Length: 84
Image (cartoon, rainbow, N blue to C red):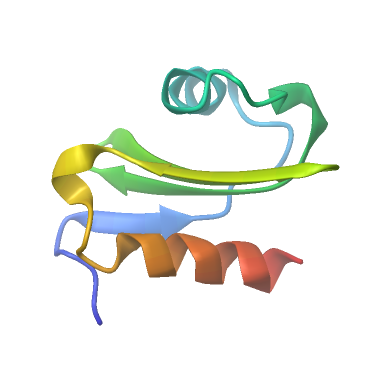
């Protein structure tokens, strides 16, 4: 399945830049962002709409409701798997 035209998935370098860190914190407030091992973010129109984050002892994937079921979840998981 291909992604919607304006969506891209990226694996940013860690630690996350401040704007990406703020977006990840908004989506996943419970995640210890300072301890991330891997991060994949979905971006649409310059806004972070999804994240798949991995840290020692945990992993979470969050996607804004309106974007679910369009293949983005799989793309995020694939990007994290590539980084492992």
